[in-house]
Length: 379
Image (tube, rainbow, N blue to C red; front, side):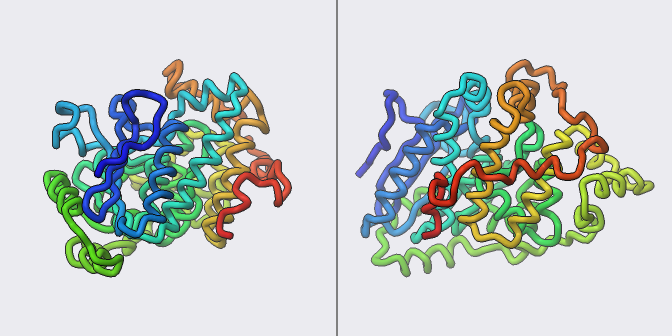
């Protein structure tokens, strides 16, 4: 039986199907690299809530379409996962004062929590681009499958934002100080690094994914336990998961402040990696680097629900602490995705110009505890 998730358009950007014991989700906005709209977030949530409460659904899987191949053909249904939230929408909504921007982040973070705490096996086919909001859709999965095509990142500092969608929670739990490294730089990693950093569980050749998907769809499991047993046999976690050697990363990214990290990288003689990373950090928003470092270190001692509430406060401040064009995030999106001049005008301009306490405003909640839009998470 096929159940298409509700959508106001004729073509759904989320396809929700019931096959066998599985609930199957396909992100179907390939021309936008499956970037998430508010409607897509709501469609995904509706399907997952329905399947959570349906005893006939024993597991759930999610994949993304790509721009190659004819629509509906096997080659079109893998090769791209999700490039994140629709940042052009963020830019337009922020400048227009559109309340849908607030709704987007509240609903997206609620969806992230639903996936992270889902009571049934959840399998993410993380082929192709897996960035930002795509990480939020996949990091809570019981099985995270990557391929030779996987390009994974939390690149938000590149647009004057921070790694949200629970990024504080899952990045801070990477081995050593890899979380600080990935959060601050936004570096793109492949399958082996993703597994080593604990952000993926298993690698399979991209050509195998259609068969795995069809195998899931053809199963009729008698119980959730039977589904778990099948997954453990057919999709076992790689022994290298979460065991990356981070000593070199830690020697820099364990340091107390952003300035200390950059200074150490720039002073590392004959270290091409350090020079490259220092150059990357010099291009990011200095203010948001400080906000991000504080986020990761606070989140390391937080529950998932508390981290998401903190991130909801932070993203509000990204658009309201300095409203309109004064926002680092609005300016970052303008430079990267709107005008595409790739020359953001950060304020402050240099890492050295960020004064103590400037990041503190991003951690102030605009809501009383009882009025927080994510107050119900974790209860």
